[in-house]
Image (cartoon, rainbow, N blue to C red; front, side):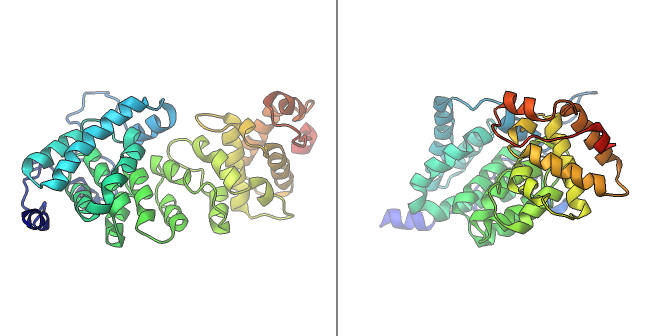
Length: 349
């Protein structure tokens, strides 16, 4: 009987926030939607000091750093689960502070998936409490990792009422990935939700969101990916290959007439793939020869072309020499029996 009433009275409302008088990151974003810098950024900065832009640390580590060792991930997950389970059992200042300290110790991204997996084991009997903890951290915490932790919990335990909160946080590049993965769990249309977010962010947030619906069959999303999808404030090469494949670039160009936004988008994708970079290169795109040939065919018929198309054609000519065509690349890059692109200097000038 005592345990029943103790559980019934469980609440975070009267606890002392472990961050003291620290500024709520959520409120800061809500009241300053265009502000890039967060209140937990180190101050004052040293002259000429290099710092991470919003979302860049998670973006770089997620794309370029080796995954943590399983034993390291397991250890960190347990260091967060232990105080979380204590707080779920007994809402005290000490337990709340212990959880906060464990959360802000280091980046959450490397252990996010493993943490959610372990969380599912205690979820059935404590979903309501975990959701309250998630909202508490997501709306009131003063540190970005603590805010991400709250979002992580809402991605498992949240409901429709949490959508406005997540929609506010998702537009800041630092939280786009976490909130974008949480939102589909509290809405009905996963792909539509991600697409809506992708259209509203431009930095690392766009990269991380566009990577998600990479198997969509919705024509409006495929069309947007070819025309706008790869463009971001970091590097278009991160998304060029994904957008080419998801949008079926080679098929979209297989028409007698195409709209100018598609032609412009194709030029941007082809240039980004030829230049290569941190993600896919031209050799990773199976239909590159066909797409390039069809792009060139449209360019030869187009008028009032901007500089981007002349640069694209120039890079194609440098990449696929007129006297060699695509055949040597096909044999060297393992792309198999892809049709040879027949380009000549005469046809492109």
